[in-house]
Amino acid sequence: MTKYLTLLKITWQNSLVYRLSLFTWRLRSFLSSLMSLTVWTVIFTSNNSAFGYSKESMITYIFLVAFLQSMIIASSLNGLASRLYSGEISNYLLKPINLFGLFAIQEIADKIKNLLFLFLESLFLFLIFKPIIVFPDLKLFLLFLIWSFGGLILNFIITLLFGSLGFWSPQVWGPKFLFFMILDFTAGKLFPLDILPIMLQKIIYLTPFPYLSFVQIQLFLNRLNSQDILKHTVILVFWIFILGTITNKIWKKGLKSYESVGI
Amino acid sequence: MITIKVSNLKKYFKVYKKEPGLWGSIKSLWKRSYETVKAVDDVSFEIAEGEIVGFIGQNGAGKTTTLKMLSGLLYPTDGKTTVLEFNPWDRKPEFQKQFALVMGQKNQLWWDLPAIESFHLNKAIYEIPDKIFDETLAKLSKILDVEDILRIQVRKLSLGQRMKCEIIAALLHNPKVLFLDEPTIGLDVVMQKTLRDFIKTYNKEFGATIILTSHYMGDVKELCERVIIIDKGHKVYDGKLADIINKYARNKILSLTLENSITKNDLEQFGTVKSFKNNQATLIVPRKEATKIASKILNQFKVNDLNIEEVPIEVVIREIFGAKKIH
Image 1 (cartoon, rainbow over the protein chains, first blue to last red):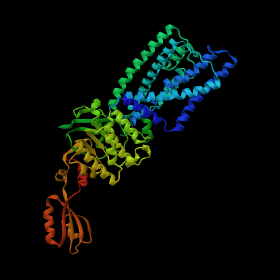
Image 2: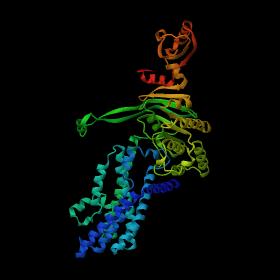
Image 3: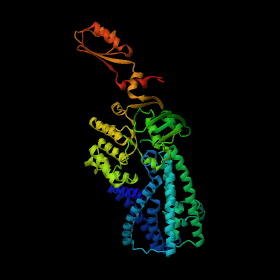
Image 4: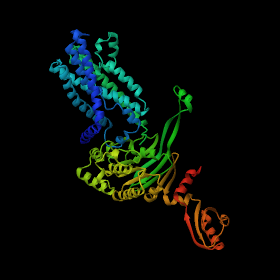
């Protein structure tokens, strides 16, 4: 266990070396929330509700998106494919350390850092917009945390799956970019999915993407009945299981054809 | 005891072959041809505990690929490998704690942090007890003279300093088996010497088994009694370094200092004149006739000094690679 703790510490140290990059990266995320809040506040100045969302719900929605973006979708492993292709992971394949453990630690380090910054940034936003956040009851809140953790695992698996392309090709930005585009639309990051036509919603629900933020938010905002809750829990577990199995198989195959170039 | 056993090891890579030019690139969008490159082809050898073996070969001969298979990084296309009785590919922690691979051209140190941070990480990864870590680190940094640079960002270090830190990082867990791939690359002559001495000491002190690849024959000559020569994925020689000369050298070198002035032509009947200046000459003569020719020269001219030398090992090895068939 000590090895993973040391790895966590060194990952943090490494990410704090370049202050400008750290600052601008956080600024980007802060501005994104600021923009959404401004837009929706303007929309709600003339209406009491829009697309079935009250002002409070929508503001809560935006804060939740920022939180889940940092917790679930933001990943330190987006460059994994090029790390594989360039042979960088060879260093770790030689050592008595579990590769997935290593990636998990890098993710955890990244997410804890995100949360710390997010907390500070949210304080600012609170001071500016003075919003009223609607909180669910304790039972739902706990389930929300569990679902968020599930979403985190699901995103970790999807990131590893994309990363594994690096075993065969260095140029994975094409598929990755497509993934980000789809994600922006289907995880509910830009707008709530339920403002889309029913047909489109149905199609989106066949993919794992809504489980990377949207269903969690719906749960938090108390917009799901107990039948929905059960259904989504089953589907979330299903996706984790299916994609986890596929990813595991592909990694085993990938490691066999790994060329360990450069090193 | 046999530490490393390799039998009929093969590694083939599938390589995409692009036709030249823009049209070739466009065509490759829908049709690609691949060819198989045999990086390592049917190589077998055994290495006993405590041996230092030199791997010699030209660029792309398959040396590094073999080392990577021995380390468990690459999955062999065919053949069997055991290192310390483990199959490297299984990547068992008990195995990984007993070996290290040092690559002269790549680093394992965290680039943006001081080397000491990477050392602490290795300490945790290899589960090295505090006391042993402190002792080993103190000893290694003293021998390699890096005590005052351990807290400087790795990217700010010179190549030589970085290489020394790489070696320390690789040896903190006192590995029993060491794979050194071009460890002296880019180092100055003094540093090369220090490193060679260090490798020698490490081998004696720990009884470590070492495979070394190097472009500098100096490294190999000083460290390795035994060498394995690999060419185009095949093993072409496995034996004592000294025996290479007996087996493959076709010529010897005659160096003369003459008392009277003679012409270059006078000497050319004996062999190839490599240099001729101020009554000093160097001749390349067939190995078997070297003594006979020497005595003829002594009879014919007034000679102050005469030396018969072996050709340098570098030249012999160059000839081996140049020859079409040497089996």
